[in-house]
Length: 420
Image (tube, rainbow, N blue to C red; front, side):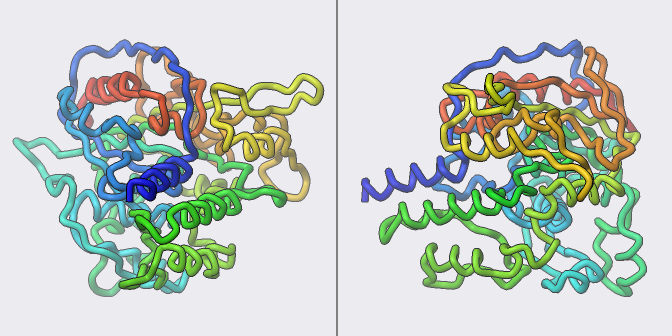
């Protein structure tokens, strides 16, 4: 049994894309005075998991419990869990229900259009007070999101504030409050290594993001064998891909990976949303709101190869597991056939996401990105610069302790003024 648990430990790290080992000094913020009391909610990225999964190995912090660290420091923090491979629309609907409480409603129009169930799981709610008033003040939240979680957070804010005209027109009874609009319930969104303009790893033909995810899941299934089952849920119930009673993880994973959604036959899935074309499609209508503060961090763990100028993984900074995808991103170009054009400015990366893409929505977007100068600008993307670490090190997966970074982020967002 101990041997199997060790194997499962290796599985957890492979799902998290392993580790980084350096420590980067974090920027200091000008704001010192606490300006609001809103709690923080973490939203994970592609392939992520919740606190009750992975035998307690944290997505947010690895062996360090970032939720507890922030809460103990006086910043109440919660961790959400949504579909690790679902589309941003589906994840936003799940995130709403997970925080507020209730049954996930993907929307009558959306579910019919894409051919999956309208309703999903039911949740008690991380913060049921969300959106209500206490002493005349609206209870909002701060979102901190990693990777695809940044796209998902933007989608959630869009639906909360603007709703969905299509859902309002189609749904005769039982319209989800999420699609009504008029809900300025998010005070800030902080994104870390988020592919706001997509990742070219989801575009290339020789080695796609889907292939990397398939490799990790297959390796996970093989590592556990007949011993301890990996505590991991694809959360694709809306597609009829729920793990059956008594079904081993290997068969469950094969059923998912052999499905039409995994193999690119539908667009209501993460691999499309994470592509540069899919991201540009979202950027066209998911826009920054004037009453929300936005912060973005890029990550980079590559260096220029002297002979070719291509970007390759930097030893001791990038985990070796990411060297192959980093090299693919680090030389990929495209022009003429599709938009956006991809040139060498896209080459720097963290092993999964192009560094330039994490700055904020810029392709097919009207959002404004500004360099952070100590004074946050509302309704714009305050770019916080580049962290020299790989894609999973930014959330503390591996030997990297990012507690100080997240305490700094928490202090920053709690110092923001209350916006009615």
